[in-house]
Length: 73
Image (tube, rainbow, N blue to C red; front, side, top):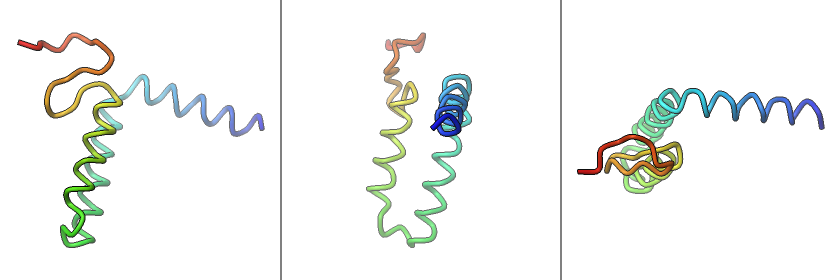
């Protein structure tokens, strides 16, 4: 169990330190899947990408889930 706990902690630390890299990866991954499926699931993929982006702190709409310093005006 220690190996998985260590990997989970490292992944969590990376996510906290690099949310922009994770968002970029999610976008690229979603775009790849969208391309491979011929756009058949575009709406679902976009919703998933937006949900992950929101969870990481801010989506396309400018909402910042963790109360960061994005301007809401």
